Length: 307
Ligand SMILES: C[S@@+](CC[C@H](N)C(=O)[O-])C[C@H]1O[C@@H](n2cnc3c(N)ncnc32)[C@H](O)[C@@H]1O
Image (spheres, rainbow, N blue to C red):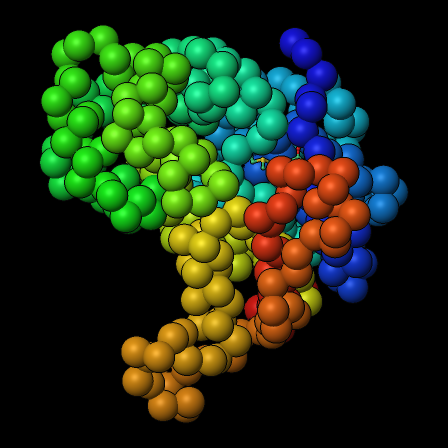
Protein backbone atom coordinates (compact mmCIF):
# COMPACT_ATOMS: atom_id res chain seq x y z
CA UNK A 1 0.00 0.00 0.00
CA UNK A 2 1.30 3.45 -0.99
CA UNK A 3 2.32 5.90 1.73
CA UNK A 4 -0.16 8.60 2.66
CA UNK A 5 -0.17 11.81 0.62
CA UNK A 6 -2.51 13.55 3.06
CA UNK A 7 -1.12 16.69 4.73
CA UNK A 8 -2.72 17.25 8.16
CA UNK A 9 -4.17 20.74 8.67
CA UNK A 10 -4.00 23.18 11.59
CA UNK A 11 -1.67 20.88 13.53
CA UNK A 12 -0.06 23.60 15.68
CA UNK A 13 -3.45 24.91 16.90
CA UNK A 14 -4.63 21.43 17.85
CA UNK A 15 -1.41 20.63 19.73
CA UNK A 16 -1.58 23.94 21.57
CA UNK A 17 -5.16 23.21 22.68
CA UNK A 18 -4.26 19.65 23.76
CA UNK A 19 -1.22 20.93 25.72
CA UNK A 20 -3.64 22.58 28.14
CA UNK A 21 -5.04 19.14 29.13
CA UNK A 22 -3.63 16.40 31.40
CA UNK A 23 -2.41 14.84 28.15
CA UNK A 24 -2.36 11.10 28.88
CA UNK A 25 -5.00 9.62 26.58
CA UNK A 26 -6.17 10.88 23.19
CA UNK A 27 -8.76 9.82 20.64
CA UNK A 28 -8.30 10.50 16.93
CA UNK A 29 -11.73 9.68 15.55
CA UNK A 30 -10.69 10.24 11.91
CA UNK A 31 -7.14 8.89 11.78
CA UNK A 32 -6.87 8.92 7.95
CA UNK A 33 -3.18 8.77 6.97
CA UNK A 34 -2.15 9.24 10.62
CA UNK A 35 -0.68 12.75 10.29
CA UNK A 36 -2.43 14.30 13.28
CA UNK A 37 -2.02 11.10 15.29
CA UNK A 38 1.75 11.13 14.75
CA UNK A 39 1.99 14.79 15.72
CA UNK A 40 0.02 14.14 18.93
CA UNK A 41 2.19 11.15 19.88
CA UNK A 42 5.36 13.15 19.21
CA UNK A 43 4.12 16.06 21.33
CA UNK A 44 3.07 13.83 24.25
CA UNK A 45 5.74 11.10 24.54
CA UNK A 46 3.96 9.35 27.42
CA UNK A 47 0.47 9.46 25.95
CA UNK A 48 -1.60 6.67 24.40
CA UNK A 49 -3.92 7.13 21.46
CA UNK A 50 -7.07 5.47 20.20
CA UNK A 51 -7.42 5.82 16.46
CA UNK A 52 -10.51 5.05 14.48
CA UNK A 53 -11.64 5.50 10.89
CA UNK A 54 -14.52 4.00 8.95
CA UNK A 55 -12.22 3.39 5.96
CA UNK A 56 -10.37 0.06 6.17
CA UNK A 57 -7.65 1.26 3.78
CA UNK A 58 -6.99 4.33 5.93
CA UNK A 59 -6.59 2.09 8.97
CA UNK A 60 -4.06 -0.12 7.15
CA UNK A 61 -2.07 2.98 6.21
CA UNK A 62 -2.24 4.32 9.77
CA UNK A 63 -1.19 0.93 11.19
CA UNK A 64 1.97 1.05 9.10
CA UNK A 65 3.07 4.45 10.46
CA UNK A 66 1.88 4.48 14.08
CA UNK A 67 3.72 2.78 17.00
CA UNK A 68 1.76 -0.38 17.89
CA UNK A 69 2.67 -0.17 21.59
CA UNK A 70 1.03 3.25 22.00
CA UNK A 71 -1.93 3.07 19.65
CA UNK A 72 -5.20 1.11 19.52
CA UNK A 73 -6.68 1.08 16.02
CA UNK A 74 -10.30 0.22 15.30
CA UNK A 75 -12.42 0.38 12.13
CA UNK A 76 -15.55 2.26 13.21
CA UNK A 77 -17.89 5.02 12.23
CA UNK A 78 -17.38 7.86 14.69
CA UNK A 79 -21.10 7.81 15.45
CA UNK A 80 -20.20 4.66 17.46
CA UNK A 81 -17.82 6.48 19.83
CA UNK A 82 -19.89 5.30 22.78
CA UNK A 83 -18.93 1.68 21.94
CA UNK A 84 -15.21 2.11 22.66
CA UNK A 85 -13.93 0.19 25.68
CA UNK A 86 -11.86 3.26 26.63
CA UNK A 87 -14.31 5.86 27.97
CA UNK A 88 -12.23 8.84 29.12
CA UNK A 89 -9.97 10.99 26.96
CA UNK A 90 -7.98 14.19 27.49
CA UNK A 91 -8.33 15.20 23.86
CA UNK A 92 -10.65 14.11 21.05
CA UNK A 93 -10.10 15.08 17.43
CA UNK A 94 -12.55 14.92 14.54
CA UNK A 95 -11.02 16.01 11.22
CA UNK A 96 -14.05 15.72 8.97
CA UNK A 97 -14.52 14.89 5.31
CA UNK A 98 -12.21 12.90 3.06
CA UNK A 99 -8.43 12.57 2.93
CA UNK A 100 -6.17 13.18 -0.06
CA UNK A 101 -5.57 9.40 -0.10
CA UNK A 102 -9.29 8.91 -0.77
CA UNK A 103 -9.73 11.88 -3.12
CA UNK A 104 -6.73 11.06 -5.26
CA UNK A 105 -7.48 7.33 -5.72
CA UNK A 106 -9.49 7.04 -8.98
CA UNK A 107 -10.92 3.66 -7.94
CA UNK A 108 -12.60 5.26 -4.89
CA UNK A 109 -14.72 7.49 -7.14
CA UNK A 110 -14.62 10.65 -4.99
CA UNK A 111 -13.24 12.95 -7.67
CA UNK A 112 -14.12 13.75 -11.29
CA UNK A 113 -10.54 14.81 -12.03
CA UNK A 114 -9.74 11.26 -13.12
CA UNK A 115 -12.11 8.55 -14.29
CA UNK A 116 -13.20 5.74 -11.99
CA UNK A 117 -16.27 3.89 -10.75
CA UNK A 118 -18.74 6.26 -9.07
CA UNK A 119 -18.32 4.71 -5.62
CA UNK A 120 -17.64 7.42 -2.96
CA UNK A 121 -18.13 5.11 0.03
CA UNK A 122 -15.68 5.81 2.83
CA UNK A 123 -16.32 2.30 4.13
CA UNK A 124 -16.22 0.07 1.08
CA UNK A 125 -17.32 -2.98 3.04
CA UNK A 126 -20.94 -1.81 3.32
CA UNK A 127 -23.68 0.42 1.94
CA UNK A 128 -24.61 1.48 -1.55
CA UNK A 129 -22.23 3.19 -3.96
CA UNK A 130 -22.91 6.64 -5.40
CA UNK A 131 -23.86 4.98 -8.72
CA UNK A 132 -26.43 2.78 -6.95
CA UNK A 133 -27.72 5.81 -5.04
CA UNK A 134 -28.20 7.81 -8.26
CA UNK A 135 -30.00 4.91 -9.94
CA UNK A 136 -32.36 4.18 -7.04
CA UNK A 137 -32.85 7.26 -4.84
CA UNK A 138 -36.31 8.81 -4.62
CA UNK A 139 -36.87 12.27 -6.11
CA UNK A 140 -36.87 13.74 -2.57
CA UNK A 141 -33.55 12.07 -1.70
CA UNK A 142 -31.96 13.45 -4.86
CA UNK A 143 -33.28 16.94 -4.11
CA UNK A 144 -31.86 16.73 -0.58
CA UNK A 145 -28.44 15.65 -1.89
CA UNK A 146 -28.16 18.21 -4.72
CA UNK A 147 -30.08 21.21 -3.31
CA UNK A 148 -29.45 20.95 0.43
CA UNK A 149 -26.06 19.25 0.66
CA UNK A 150 -24.55 20.29 -2.70
CA UNK A 151 -26.06 23.78 -2.16
CA UNK A 152 -26.68 23.99 -5.90
CA UNK A 153 -29.18 26.74 -6.82
CA UNK A 154 -29.98 25.04 -10.16
CA UNK A 155 -30.65 21.69 -8.48
CA UNK A 156 -33.82 21.10 -10.55
CA UNK A 157 -31.80 20.75 -13.77
CA UNK A 158 -29.32 18.37 -12.17
CA UNK A 159 -31.99 16.18 -10.55
CA UNK A 160 -33.94 16.00 -13.83
CA UNK A 161 -30.77 14.96 -15.67
CA UNK A 162 -30.00 12.21 -13.16
CA UNK A 163 -33.56 10.88 -13.44
CA UNK A 164 -33.44 11.06 -17.25
CA UNK A 165 -30.18 9.13 -17.58
CA UNK A 166 -31.04 6.28 -15.20
CA UNK A 167 -30.32 2.91 -16.78
CA UNK A 168 -28.08 4.46 -19.50
CA UNK A 169 -24.73 3.59 -17.87
CA UNK A 170 -23.86 7.31 -17.58
CA UNK A 171 -24.30 7.32 -13.82
CA UNK A 172 -21.70 4.58 -13.36
CA UNK A 173 -18.38 6.43 -13.84
CA UNK A 174 -17.05 9.70 -12.44
CA UNK A 175 -16.05 11.12 -15.85
CA UNK A 176 -19.35 10.25 -17.55
CA UNK A 177 -21.36 11.69 -14.68
CA UNK A 178 -19.25 14.89 -14.49
CA UNK A 179 -19.80 15.29 -18.22
CA UNK A 180 -23.58 15.12 -17.72
CA UNK A 181 -23.33 17.71 -14.94
CA UNK A 182 -21.23 20.02 -17.13
CA UNK A 183 -23.87 19.86 -19.85
CA UNK A 184 -26.48 21.37 -17.52
CA UNK A 185 -24.11 23.48 -15.40
CA UNK A 186 -21.03 24.58 -17.36
CA UNK A 187 -17.86 23.98 -15.34
CA UNK A 188 -16.95 27.66 -14.94
CA UNK A 189 -20.49 28.85 -14.39
CA UNK A 190 -21.19 31.14 -11.38
CA UNK A 191 -17.92 30.71 -9.43
CA UNK A 192 -14.31 29.72 -9.99
CA UNK A 193 -15.05 26.35 -8.40
CA UNK A 194 -16.07 23.67 -10.92
CA UNK A 195 -19.84 23.18 -10.74
CA UNK A 196 -19.37 19.40 -10.45
CA UNK A 197 -17.53 19.93 -7.13
CA UNK A 198 -20.79 20.94 -5.40
CA UNK A 199 -22.73 18.09 -6.98
CA UNK A 200 -20.10 15.52 -5.98
CA UNK A 201 -20.07 16.96 -2.45
CA UNK A 202 -23.85 16.60 -2.07
CA UNK A 203 -23.84 13.03 -3.33
CA UNK A 204 -20.88 12.11 -1.11
CA UNK A 205 -22.67 13.49 1.95
CA UNK A 206 -25.76 11.44 1.05
CA UNK A 207 -23.88 8.19 0.32
CA UNK A 208 -21.94 8.35 3.60
CA UNK A 209 -24.69 9.85 5.78
CA UNK A 210 -22.08 12.40 6.81
CA UNK A 211 -24.25 14.98 8.56
CA UNK A 212 -26.27 12.40 10.48
CA UNK A 213 -23.04 10.72 11.62
CA UNK A 214 -21.70 14.08 12.84
CA UNK A 215 -24.94 14.95 14.68
CA UNK A 216 -24.81 11.56 16.42
CA UNK A 217 -21.07 11.66 17.09
CA UNK A 218 -20.73 15.04 18.79
CA UNK A 219 -22.68 14.24 22.00
CA UNK A 220 -20.79 10.92 22.20
CA UNK A 221 -17.45 12.69 21.72
CA UNK A 222 -18.44 15.06 24.53
CA UNK A 223 -19.42 12.16 26.78
CA UNK A 224 -15.98 10.50 26.49
CA UNK A 225 -14.12 13.71 27.42
CA UNK A 226 -12.58 13.85 30.88
CA UNK A 227 -13.17 16.97 32.96
CA UNK A 228 -10.72 19.49 31.45
CA UNK A 229 -10.58 17.51 28.21
CA UNK A 230 -10.67 19.28 24.85
CA UNK A 231 -12.72 18.44 21.77
CA UNK A 232 -11.25 19.69 18.48
CA UNK A 233 -13.34 19.55 15.31
CA UNK A 234 -12.11 20.55 11.86
CA UNK A 235 -14.84 21.03 9.27
CA UNK A 236 -14.61 21.79 5.57
CA UNK A 237 -18.00 23.24 4.68
CA UNK A 238 -20.64 25.39 6.32
CA UNK A 239 -23.16 22.54 6.79
CA UNK A 240 -20.71 20.72 9.09
CA UNK A 241 -19.46 23.87 10.79
CA UNK A 242 -23.03 24.92 11.67
CA UNK A 243 -23.66 21.57 13.40
CA UNK A 244 -20.44 21.86 15.41
CA UNK A 245 -21.17 25.47 16.39
CA UNK A 246 -24.69 24.60 17.60
CA UNK A 247 -23.43 21.74 19.81
CA UNK A 248 -20.64 23.86 21.29
CA UNK A 249 -23.11 26.67 22.08
CA UNK A 250 -25.53 24.19 23.68
CA UNK A 251 -22.82 22.74 25.95
CA UNK A 252 -21.59 26.17 26.98
CA UNK A 253 -25.07 27.26 28.05
CA UNK A 254 -25.59 29.76 25.21
CA UNK A 255 -28.67 30.03 23.01
CA UNK A 256 -28.10 27.56 20.16
CA UNK A 257 -29.35 30.06 17.58
CA UNK A 258 -31.92 32.87 17.20
CA UNK A 259 -34.83 30.45 17.39
CA UNK A 260 -33.71 29.14 20.81
CA UNK A 261 -36.27 30.73 23.14
CA UNK A 262 -35.08 29.08 26.39
CA UNK A 263 -34.23 31.27 29.40
CA UNK A 264 -30.60 31.20 30.53
CA UNK A 265 -31.51 29.21 33.67
CA UNK A 266 -33.03 26.49 31.49
CA UNK A 267 -29.64 25.88 29.88
CA UNK A 268 -26.75 23.97 31.45
CA UNK A 269 -23.11 25.04 31.32
CA UNK A 270 -20.95 21.98 30.78
CA UNK A 271 -17.84 23.62 29.45
CA UNK A 272 -16.40 26.52 27.49
CA UNK A 273 -15.84 27.38 23.87
CA UNK A 274 -12.10 27.98 23.40
CA UNK A 275 -12.45 29.44 19.91
CA UNK A 276 -14.93 32.36 19.79
CA UNK A 277 -14.38 32.41 16.04
CA UNK A 278 -13.28 29.31 14.13
CA UNK A 279 -9.52 29.00 13.67
CA UNK A 280 -8.47 28.97 10.00
CA UNK A 281 -5.14 28.15 8.33
CA UNK A 282 -2.61 30.96 7.88
CA UNK A 283 -1.88 32.26 4.39
CA UNK A 284 1.38 30.23 4.45
CA UNK A 285 -0.45 27.00 5.30
CA UNK A 286 -3.03 27.63 2.57
CA UNK A 287 -0.24 28.25 0.07
CA UNK A 288 1.69 25.11 0.97
CA UNK A 289 -1.48 22.97 1.27
CA UNK A 290 -4.28 24.39 -0.94
CA UNK A 291 -6.69 21.72 0.36
CA UNK A 292 -6.50 23.37 3.80
CA UNK A 293 -8.20 26.51 2.41
CA UNK A 294 -11.72 25.80 3.62
CA UNK A 295 -10.71 24.25 6.98
CA UNK A 296 -12.29 25.64 10.16
CA UNK A 297 -11.25 24.44 13.60
CA UNK A 298 -13.51 24.81 16.64
CA UNK A 299 -12.32 23.94 20.16
CA UNK A 300 -14.32 23.16 23.29
CA UNK A 301 -13.20 22.35 26.85
CA UNK A 302 -15.38 20.23 29.12
CA UNK A 303 -15.57 21.58 32.66
CA UNK A 304 -18.07 19.15 34.23
CA UNK A 305 -17.76 15.38 34.66
CA UNK A 306 -14.98 13.43 36.37
CA UNK A 307 -11.23 13.68 35.83
C1 LIG B 1 -9.61 14.67 6.51
S1 LIG B 1 -9.33 12.95 6.70
C2 LIG B 1 -8.40 12.85 8.18
C3 LIG B 1 -6.93 12.96 7.98
C4 LIG B 1 -6.10 12.74 9.22
N1 LIG B 1 -6.42 13.68 10.26
C5 LIG B 1 -4.63 12.77 8.90
O1 LIG B 1 -3.88 13.53 9.54
O2 LIG B 1 -4.19 12.02 8.03
C6 LIG B 1 -10.88 12.38 7.21
C7 LIG B 1 -10.92 10.92 7.56
O3 LIG B 1 -12.10 10.74 8.32
C8 LIG B 1 -12.69 9.53 7.97
N2 LIG B 1 -14.10 9.64 8.30
C9 LIG B 1 -15.01 10.47 7.75
N3 LIG B 1 -16.21 10.29 8.31
C10 LIG B 1 -16.04 9.33 9.26
C11 LIG B 1 -16.92 8.71 10.19
N4 LIG B 1 -18.23 9.01 10.23
N5 LIG B 1 -16.42 7.79 11.03
C12 LIG B 1 -15.08 7.47 11.00
N6 LIG B 1 -14.22 8.00 10.11
C13 LIG B 1 -14.69 8.93 9.25
C14 LIG B 1 -12.42 9.39 6.48
O4 LIG B 1 -12.48 8.03 6.08
C15 LIG B 1 -11.01 9.98 6.37
O5 LIG B 1 -10.03 8.98 6.47
